[in-house]
Image 1 (cartoon, rainbow, N blue to C red):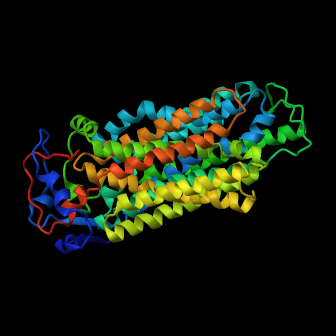
Image 2: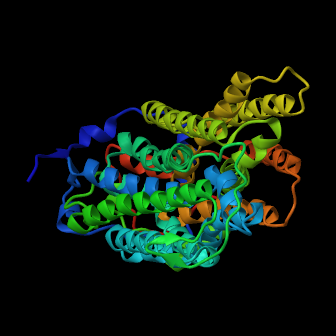
Image 3: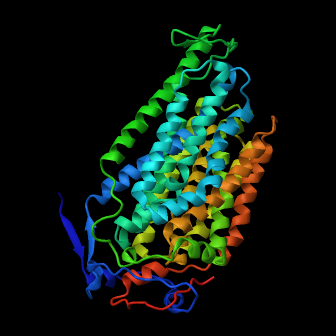
Length: 505
């Protein structure tokens, strides 16, 4: 079907800066109660430990990444069109928009553990097919033509299913990269599928306001609740009827896009390649239950995970309600959508560039994270000065401050993933990343839950975001960077470890 390249031992001699080499290797040689049994298939019984790198890895990466794109875009459907939705749908308020968005972290917090088991035991094909099915059901539910009075039920149910698709797509990038990509491409592959989720959030700021337009300033937005007649909702105001039709069109477009991805996954998405791309990819990980207990005792994972969860989770919640935050400043729904769009686009692009840089230098994740978060504090301080008009307010500076914040926080996310799986190897990547992303969704859930309390006050949201960045800094400083997995792949003649393996805490 395609050309295949078999990696040689020379690939493992590629020089990579691993930081403190002795510290990174010592956990692999230590003693602990959990043992790691290495793969004994025919490909790995030879001294050379044959490896394979396949062109089809790019197809797998694209299908997975665009599925993450769709899940993120549909999860954030409602925030960018909040002003219009609240104007034309009776009884809808900020708390309703917050709840619709909150189904993402709610579903994630509840379902993370079973999906972690699914990825670890059943593999990525089964996990991705189930995820695609959940997405398809969720988007189909949102397309059911019900009277306006029942829209909250169908939309909330649909958002719940879309949220259930999150664990595999958020935690899966490191599994896709280690299963299909050689060591010098892993961080880049992880970054690509990770930032595609942020491209999806960016697309929601573009697609939503593009299809569902702002109401004219002189429209009343009066709507009467009634049943559907000949496929249309009973509405007394022509302008409101147009806006409601546009909301339906948005639901149909997103559902159609997901249908195409679902079909592509069914056609071809194997569990793994015939040969693994690296030595570490062909090794059996610590079993699921033991891996969870090991992670619970790893202080290094908690330092990195809490830094990611507190800052990243709060930023995700903060970004989805940008329309509400900027409205008191006189920024329109359309303008806020463009600011959110460019902030996420810039952040996603930065994530790819930074990840490729880390692949080239082979480390320094901790230093880069500290630099990025220091810049994030400065950028958000700039934004606050604009909000409180302590410096002259203008739209260009508002764009610049929020886009810079997106670059610095979103650009750091692939590094959190790779730093965590490297430090906790040989624990399965799925368990580690599920833990990180669970923390991210937990703190995002806390932020959005407060939003469901009826209130017009928005200033607390900005101070909460600043506090999250500040709290994350000492956690990053305490984190000790190690590259346990990469050390195995780049050792010229890796030993056959048969003893117990310890993960340094």
